[in-house]
Length: 220
Image (cartoon, rainbow, N blue to C red; front, side, top):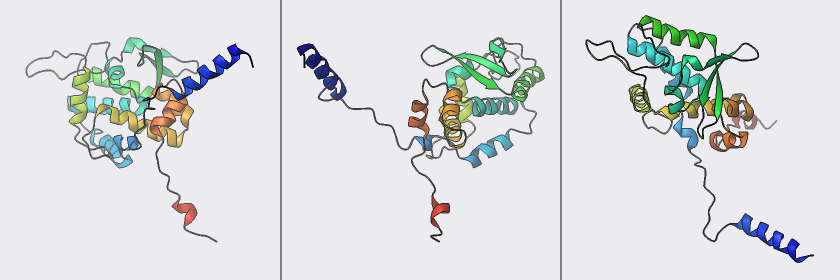
């Protein structure tokens, strides 16, 4: 073995071992508890379904948008009509800037786009941004919803995550990731969540348990 080859091998071994005090970041096995139960999701949808109040109509549009796209808070409040385009199969795509600065695309069902447009038309909102603050008393001015405003709205829904904590914006993203990973697989979940790799998706959204009871009740 040549001296150069020995140096390369030695370098690779050191790189794998890392520093003396280096530790791999651990993944929280309770990550799944940050999401919402199916029952909570159904109750929220039912709560927002029949109302003529602006806050409830906005809540419905927001809830559907968040539970279908799984976008982060910054991506949600930055969503605009001017960023809509048609995909190769005539699907409606929302172009957005992902965490890290890269461009991502979210598929929006046509009925969801119509719900957002209806929210605008009912309250005479003329803006490129999807979601807005409520006007103050005796005023008509609305501002595009901020991240802080979005968190306030979501918190006001007053439901708990599986962990027992009050709902937060990212809870909807966790719920989407867990559901898609279980029902459609890692590639589908990765594409919807905008991760760079399905490994990342599986790492954070795979449930650390499996109900094997239907296979284990009968030993015949």
